[in-house]
Image 1: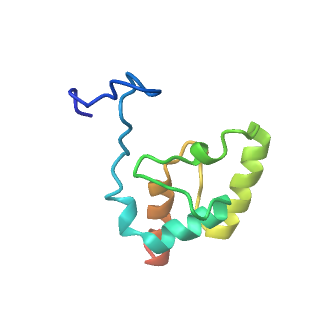
Image 2: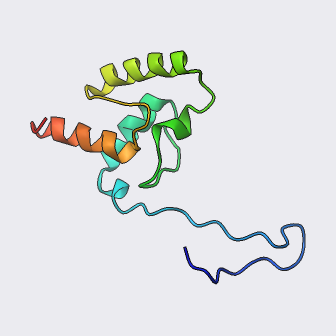
Length: 102
């Protein structure tokens, strides 16, 4: 991030730095897989970036609940899914499987 970001100087959001999204260059290459994954997560219209992680979507779940959801997601997608995965890593596995490279 830039060091000289402009800050709001007055009003309700005084001294708040602006928010910048992480890159979407990698994730944007796979729109079909992103949609399929987001539907599997239960968030079909979520904003995702190259740094979006599985835990960003299921932070409110206990470990047991998350493992159950991961097993269901693995069955839906047909690829390995790990709790600490970035979405782009899951998507790359989906693409590799689709291309027969797994």
